[in-house]
Image 1: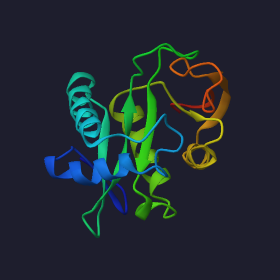
Image 2: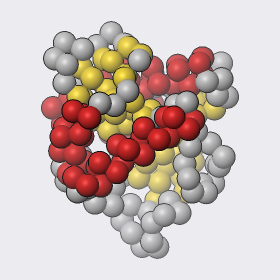
Image 3: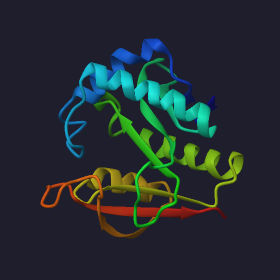
Image 4: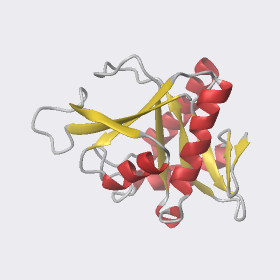
Length: 174
């Protein structure tokens, strides 16, 4: 478990599933993804998060707001399972429930995940990517110290899809 001033980055618990599924079913939260997730898809993702954590030693942690004990969302590190123009790589990603937007939690959690990646796992470089239209996520990347590195067409999206064009950011260990 890791912590910041206001957040805990912790292993997932079974009682996280309802809030996790609610977040993933919210069209506003998922507007930069293909579609909202069903409760069963969220359960599958949560199980995959646990498996990847066991396999890689790192993965996506549950982000809990300290003072309320509520699940705010997730943040973590992942090895993408598909080829990207900057592969092989480790990416950082995050997602927060709307009640926790606008509080600076995403960059706070991201900075801690980056610290863990560099200091505890010895990573040399970490990337982040998102749809070109996802300005909020790009601001989190910048506030986390990452620098814009380029644009690419996401290999898992069909030609002509509105989210096809992506931007990627990178940060190196200092």
